Image (cartoon, rainbow, N blue to C red; front, top):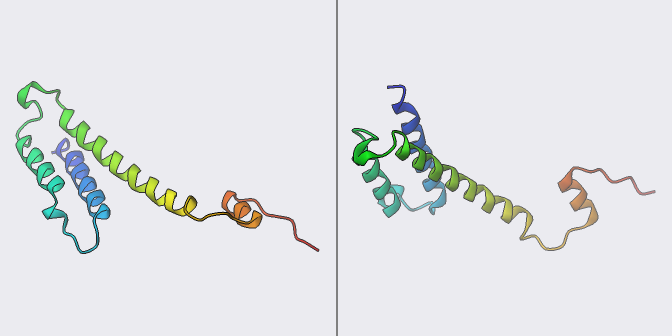
Length: 105
């Protein structure tokens, strides 16, 4: 049971990231990626060594995909926050990097 828990956590992480990438009115269960992912998880539920694979290959691929989705989402958030603003003042730039400008007299 201990080996199953990280796989379920990885699946939940994948679903959570997929849900965050969809529009608010869309359902994650109707997306082709979700259907494919669930089919693969169910197909490999009996054993990870099916078709002579390494023992943890499917879990590794799922974890890698979850990490990629999370990193992509975070990149988009950072890109929106810092890139699409146009030109900034010196004070705004100093605030972003954590500097404090001296007071003007």
